[in-house]
Length: 371
Ligand SMILES: Cc1ncc(COP(=O)(O)O)c(C=O)c1O
Image 1: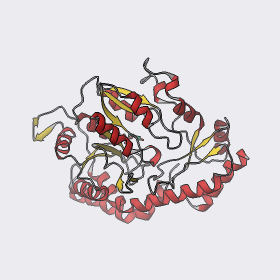
Image 2: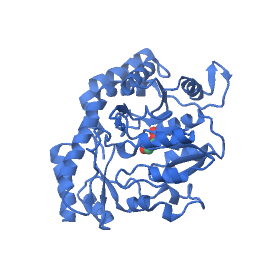
Image 3: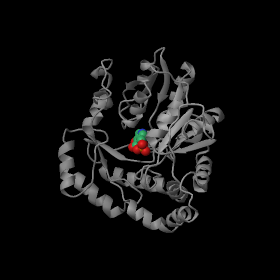
Image 4: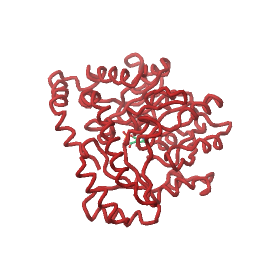
């Protein structure tokens, strides 16, 4: 689904030099490259504080630990996302409240959020799914009205701009009270191992989070709060520092590949391609996800696999149907869109190195099955 090797070959000199710097200086943990990457990312995102950590799941968990949330508080998030989003809510003994998504954007439904709010609701976790910004204007408005925290799950959309109703652009992840991202290798900004970060514009929250990532210490061997050990190591920070200057070009390459896929695939009424041009650059295509509405999705995937074309289903099972997160509070009628998407969606290869020949080979294979 991705071609990290070709991407690495183009930036090998910079990446290798960063890794060598860590080896030469023996600064494996918390070294200068971690701080340099942090500062570069703060500047890039236009956010006051970036707190690097070990992975995106930790980033979400630590973000929630830093807020004033108590066991039993309800946290609203989307039914259609990767499990990490809901996992950390449950792990912290908060109550996940899953809501349906919108068909066009596959992002959390604003009406769904409104219906799910109770006196126990304390936070909303919008996920910018597959690289597309959620409707942050509406989410922030609801949050302000009900005094809720907004924790952006930005694992899939780093670098995407969100265009608000006034036409102003802000980087996704710099809008809510706090945001979490992942630097998993296949992410739009990926390292060569695990990595993650938390972003916030709130100085006091940033201070709290910096202690939580480091065993709850604000002063060496003084543990003021219960924390975790979650660090971005210096080698990964070096890789990320080398890759960050390329992120806009990487996202542009993904958008161009998506545009070419769309042009080739928008020819059949059963094949619904992602729309993305209505709102500037709000979609950075972490995944290129299409719907096949004629009931033949699984047969199509078998056909693509027979031609050695990688393809995947994100996500095959809604979270409310997962054993770990099923709950008597949920009714199937609450999740018609997610249930339908899980039956219809499939993802085609999406990365920065896709060329015209590959896109033609892939789209020809899709069309020869469908038409
Ligand atoms: C939406 C979403 N949230 C959170 C995560 C967790 O990130 P990580 O794998 O770095 O823990 C992922 C990773 O795939 C993700 O896609």
